[in-house]
Image (cartoon, rainbow, N blue to C red):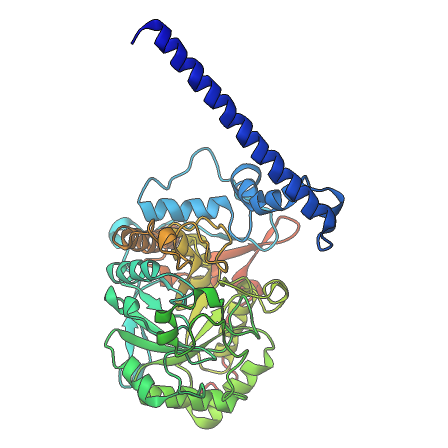
Length: 507
């Protein structure tokens, strides 16, 4: 091609480029004009009416604010509900990369309510350390008691609230780590069973998966669900830390055909559970339900709730003694007011229920007072994602700990706070197939297992530093709690384990 032809081609390209640019500018100006006219004539949004076009950026910045605070402005220990330091430890543990830190801790040691552990002058040597001791739930009360040594297990997350690949990864990872997986109130799906993990089947207020057409408990369906050998226990959900007094909320856009079939509800409609069990209106009703479920299933049966009005536990424990110890629940799961959820009314998530730091020692002490501590096992739940928090719960008296959000972080959760929108960017809480592509169960299950193992190991590190051989050897005298003045007090002195009341000491 001659030089003149090249010059002519270049001029043609420039001309077309200029026309294209002019066209795009024209379209852009037309769009701005339409937006201006829409904004100035609409009556819904004051900012847009007073500041047409420009006012729209407010909503963009509001939407992006969470992202910028998380990655650019929040310090390592500032962000809520989980700060960067907490999330980073989970990510490193799940990826099995170096979890050591240098120079010094960024955790403040003068903040009221924080805990510190008391190291021994004679720590447990590596050759003297042992694995966490096994604990049996159920004992003589049921046909199939459950024994496990697992320290941290996977808390309730329903299929529906989380995606198919997330459930598959959790199931396989739980089996590999030797821990249990709670189904959540959304019923037992094939994906819970697929990985071969031990399963805790949860019965919520809507009784999804074991309900009849009227929403009542169907014994035949319960029998079929609990006939699976993997189903080791049944948990009756009374309330959830993030929304006590409110049932599960699954937006209709997340209720697919499959989820609707598993739950026994209509596709595409909001799945809103009653705010309480219609057939459990007293402590006697609760004990009747526990006995019935245990009889039908043959499995250890207990209940989960966030602690509120403590008179309930007084009435419950007295009723157990009136009926006999066989009537007691096999376990109680204590959820924290700062527990997580996919969707909850903000007044409940902000203001209702006791945090675990107060409720766990309270209920453990009451069990001791009523002579029920050996009969009823205690499971602690709520923001227990790091070794320090788990070690504290065991020291106070928990037999087991569970976490949901910790394992979500292990799956890759970035705390985008979009769990209720079906737009989760990591594929964990969405049913959008395109967004689910990034969550590969085979890879993420390894991270789930690694997180569980590394957390149990680091809880052991704390225990060994305190001079005990395994995590369940931690006691209250190993813990001090920081006061507002920066000093600390022994948990064993301020919250000593009470003796059984005389009238209950012989049971």
